[in-house]
Structures are given as structure tokens and as C-alpha cells.
Image (cartoon, rainbow over all chains, first blue to last red; front, top):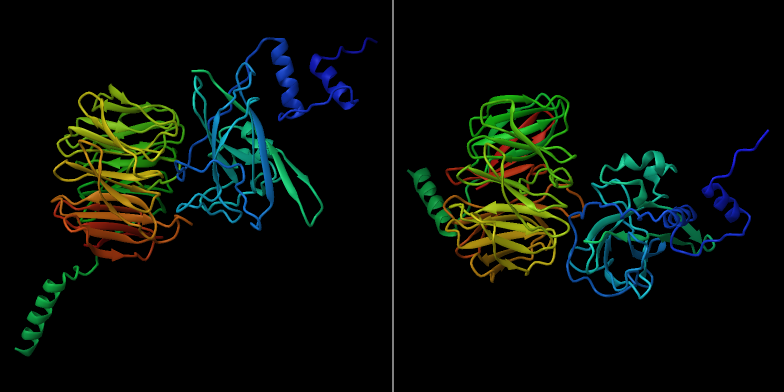
Length: 213
Length: 327
């Protein structure tokens, strides 16, 4: 009996499982394989989905990648990613404004706590250090707001969500619509926990894909 | 005689110290279904509510007479505007906007906007869509697209107004309908010529989003307020800041200038939760002095100046809507 042929994706997954392929990028393995396949087929990356700006955006957030002050309560969180165009080329110097609540779910409306303006480096990479946001009353899920702008590209307004959010009950594929504001499953990102129980840190990868104007 | 003297002295005392009139409940509207969303017309003559049974009910004020019930046929509708003559605008989360004229229960027209904002957060703020004062045009905010100005009743697009990436959050026509003021989610207040849609001027004195905007009665100034916990008076011709009121205790969710232009009122929103009661306030526009402040027994779901110059606020209990005359 003839065995069914492996698809290209199956083959790449097998390579990854056997260690002959590893992914060192802000994308997950599945996303990296998607990108590989799209490149092979000369297909464009889908732009990062839009998600509403929310009521507490504030202009002129400080230029800093450190949103978390020493001693701030809450789970330390590092968010990183790469800003690329739909053709997968890096967008250097993209401006990324982020804002979120503190660990208790409160926005700083009077000042700029947990608000920042970032600039992607020459490879389009960005990163910031914060805490896991709390649940803002009136909103269902923990989230971080993004406003991403780059010359020649459509400005993106979106939000980052966390697969570990209890609202998703461990199954964001099935439950992400519990927050009607979430426009796409793509915005719910997996969380990597590191450290020991006394010093736990979370890390999230959130790549951004912008459309050309 | 002694009582009369005391009464006269009390009246004189009140006149001298400008004690505001007592806050009274002027109407109690029975509801058979929980109210999800509520609006009052700009002139205070109509109140409309979207209820749990998915019916829209519309009352006259201050009589509290139920005028009509509109069956939405199972749709979840956010009410976004009630015109001075009783026309209604509602929106669904998918961006469908419906408009009903004052008497017909069938929608006069329906259009679809990309990511219409009304249902997203401040469901009770009548700030994202307005009829012009003449009633002949209609401005609708959208999040990812430009604001649309439509002809009524055809629904034909007259022009669009540029929108910041996050969209717009409040819009108002001047009383002569010659200008449109639009508050963007980027905190920038933009003022347009309403006949052409051309941007005339803008103001960047607020850093956070404005949730409410209005023109002064003479149309010479625009008032805006929102997340900055302050309100600003801006020259409608130059965009220059004239005056700032604040800091206030909380975020400004709604503001309105009285029919005679002598008072400015605001409904605040507790930043930690919109489910908590927050103050409503009234200022004298000439002096900038606060003349009334009241925290209602429940969340102020709607507010408006009545046509005869009273500031009305609506709260709800499980079986009724309560209309208060605050000033």
C-alpha cells in the first residue's frame, strides 16, 4: 500500500520536530512555516487585523521601552515583535505607540504610566518591558493597545490579547469571541512563562504586518 | 405674617447666593423590560430606550407619554441619536446604521459603516452621530473610515470628513448649521465648513480623546471635553484655546450648552467603572462659575437641556426610568 505523500507543511513540521529546522524569529513555528510557504508561493502576508482604539489613547506618550518601574506589582511582561510589510520586508523606524492598564486594570488617564512610544530598529524589531495588564471594568479581556505608523503604510490600530487570559478558559480558538471587541483570533497571542515560581516572567511575541498605502 | 417674612427673606437669600433650584423628579416612566440603552433629544422633548425585549420605546418629555414602540426583530441596537423632532438613529455592532423618521416604525433608511463606533464603549453617549439643526443632513462617525455626512431622508452621501486612524468620537453642528466640530480619538478637535466639508481649523490642546463636543449658542466657540478630565472653549474660527475648565473629578462623557447659551452642563464618567454613579454639573458660561453639581442615585444614562432651559438627567431602576430636573 502506498503511503500518502507528505505535504510541504507536514515535511517542514517534521523537520522542526526532529531538530533539523528551528525557528529563531518573533513568529511562532506555525507562523514561520506559513511565511515560508507564502514566500515559496510569492503570496503576501495578511496585514495585522484592526481592533478598536478604545477610549483612553493619549498623545505624546514618552519614548521609552521600560513601562514597568522597579517594584511595580504584577507579572513582569516582555512584548516583542517585528514590524514588516505584507511582502515580509522589515519596516525600520516604524513608530509604535502602546498603552495598557496596570495589573489591576486601571488606566493612567492623568499621566503616562504604562504608555510609551517605541521606534522599531533597523530590522523592524521592537520590544518593551511592562506588566501583564489587569481586567479593565467594562472590558472582558486583558489587552494592550497599539497604534503603529510608518511612512508609506496604512496606520494600524489594534490590540494584543493573551491566550492565558482566564476568559478564554484555555481554549482561545473556541472562546476568543467571548470578548466581542476582539476582531480576530490572530490577536490572541501565546504567552511564554520563564523563571521560578518566586520570580516568574512572561514573554509574548506580537509581530506587526502593515499594508502599503 | 411671620411665615411670609421668613419666606421672603429665604427667597432673597437664595437670590443673593444663587442657590440652584431643588432637584426634582419630573417624570417616572414605567418600563416592562430592562433598559439597555437610552438617549434624550437635544431639546429634551423625547426620550428613547432600547430594552432587553429588543424593542425601542419612545416617550415625550416631560409628560412621560409613550409615543411608540419599534420592534427591532431581534437585533441588538445601540441608540445613537434622537432628533429634536423625534427621529431616531440606531446602530448595530456590525456597522449597520438605521434611521427612523418621527412617526413610522419602519426604518427610513439603512446604511453600513466600517466598524461603527457607537456600540463599542459609551453606549449612552449621544455623541457619535447627529442630525443638523435643520434636520436636512446627518453626520455619522466610523472608526476606520472617514466621517460621512449624509442627506436626509435619502441617505445620499454629501461628503466625507477626514478621520484620524482611530476614528472620531464626538460630532456637533453649530446652531446655524454652518460648521461641524469633530473630536477625534487622537484628541484633536477639528472644525469644518458644513457646506463643503473643508477643514477650517483645529485645536490640539487636549491630549486624550474628547467624548463630547458642542458649539456655543452664537457659534463662535466650540466646547470639548473627555479623557483629559477638563473642558476647553476654542475659537471656532482660529482654533485657539480661549478657556479651560478643570481639572474635573472624572472623565467628561457628555456636555451641552443650554438653549440660551448661558450655561454649560456636563455628565461625568468614573474612569474606574462606567457602572458607578458619577456627578452631573452645570456652569455659568459667562463667569465659568459652577452653579450646580449633583451625583444621581444611579448612573446618569442620559442628559439634555430641555427646550425651556432645564438640565434633565435620566437614571433607571429595574421597573422605571426616572427623569430629574437638575437645574
